[in-house]
Image (cartoon, rainbow, N blue to C red; front, side):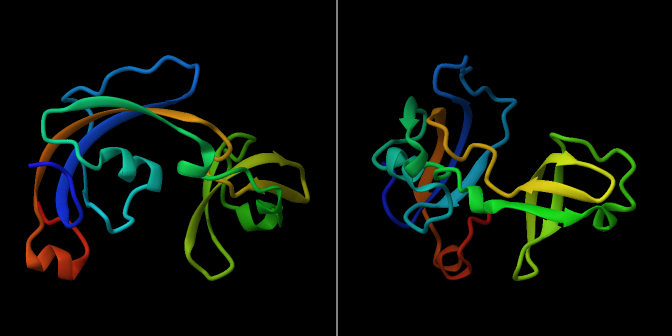
Length: 155
């Protein structure tokens, strides 16, 4: 069966910025399950998976627009240092979980900090980068009515 809309798909992958070493995924890599055509993975990767079948391996290069988007400098924020009072190992480069404007959890990277404030980058770590994905399609099947209703693959 080839991947088309409403298929339940399991695959594994590795990725690297274009020009950096990329390894093939092996059986130690975790499986990712999704409903094809339901925007549950990045658009460019979903499009690249279309038409592939279980057992196929391929590589695809995705532009920032097809992957995690361009960097957005408006997503750099400064937060009072007090918000991280309980974190003893806070340092530049660390990924931290914060709540965004709507109160939802979000990941941010600490850019720099001093005694008064912490500067955070809320862009995805791969934003602005062309990425190469090495993909192995593990299984493809028609999604069940329940999976389609729930919006997730159950096995």
